[in-house]
Length: 372
Ligand SMILES: Cc1cc2nc3c(=O)[nH]c(=O)nc-3n(C[C@H](O)[C@H](O)[C@H](O)COP(=O)(O)OP(=O)(O)OC[C@H]3O[C@@H](n4cnc5c(N)ncnc54)[C@H](O)[C@@H]3O)c2cc1C
Image 1 (cartoon, rainbow, N blue to C red):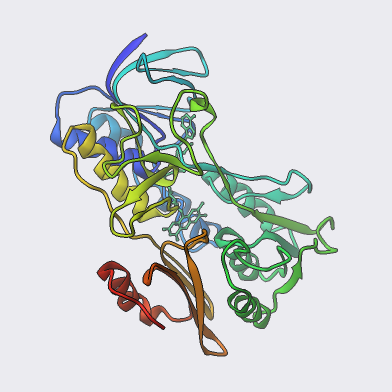
Image 2 (tube, rainbow, N blue to C red):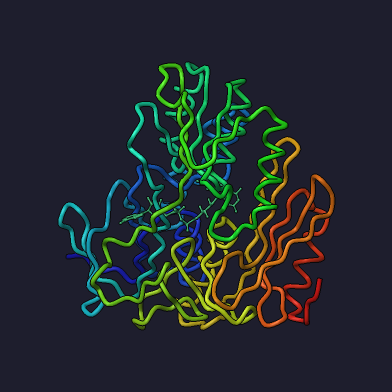
């Protein structure tokens, strides 16, 4: 068994930022990142650009292996953590190696849900997924996308970019069926149809099994939690942490896509899946693992711009018993959906209104009364 001062499970942007933050503050401690994939840190955000041929594969990488050794951060990649015993401060990898830690950060993100139904089916989460899409998209004539979220939209853009006949199979209710109002979803679909995308609601495209079809799925992520199930951590659609990103165990922290943290600003628990949130929460987790006790409270923002369609998610976008949803249609190409709770704006979704982003962010942050 090995002893590590700071053990980080997951070497994405959040885990890497945490490790580097600790190293700056503490030059001597032993820091180890255990990462399931075989690569140094790369940008998931840039994956679509690589797939479209707009960025070289090597441009996706944000670190090389030498970087970790230069910083005296141990980087154990191609290894999966399979169990956690928080009472004894112990994790084990697939090959049976055990690690005793002083402080632990869990930052394992998620893996895409798969249909495993079609021959030429692709996800878009890792660089290896991207390599496979690059290889297969060039042989295809038709592209079928199954899903109704951001990754589905990335596939639409990729398949259109390669000139494929593009078919999008969304849920019966359309985009983000759990919380998007029908008129907003209808507008997004209308704008996609104008680009020549054929849309199917709640059914597969008849072309999905054709030999010359590539299938892209974007049906959500399963958070990577199997190795800590049963370990006594509080998981509720995210690994629940307090304002300092600490779990119910004193020396166990979580950050990035995995963490569901208490936002003081919004007075509610939130879990965000975006790059900035992952990086900034990683930084705070690093500080707080050094006992700095800094309050983390990032307001989420995720945006996508393809051709004539821009979508921005700001703050909390979701539905629960206490959240009211209202939509303002601005024109036949622009609208904003608002998420309001106790008279205050918690979040919004802007379709083709990027110019309102800063103003609405200020409104959310101000916590002033909000009326449409
Ligand atoms: C194609 C694509 C485009 C995107 N575009 C945008 C965008 O435009 N803007 C934006 O803000 N966000 C975007 N995102 C989302 C953003 O990339 C994520 O929110 C961010 O990468 C999350 O970082 P993370 O460090 O929390 O998790 P991850 O990047 O998921 O890293 C977690 C790591 O943990 C590892 N791991 C998991 N389980 C184990 C285990 N048991 N043992 C060891 N290692 C393990 C995984 O291999 C993984 O590398 C995009 C994502 C994708 C896939």
